[in-house]
Image (cartoon, rainbow, N blue to C red):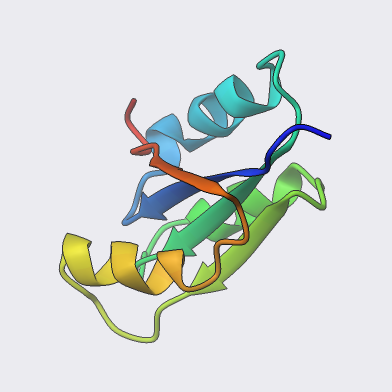
Length: 92
């Protein structure tokens, strides 16, 4: 079996780009991945967009306060199960 890749998506009010970002992962030819979606105290509907994909490979976590990007990434990494970790910003 191919190695699991953990894709960290940190999000702070990323709703304009989020659907396209997550879709870009889903439509890759490599399928052994997980998305660690870490909502950094968004005030928009970012979490609802992430949930709308209804894919068990998308793990959703939320912060109860606003964090600096490096702190948010470190929190997200704690949930990663993959052999490899990569980052995908919501506007990429």
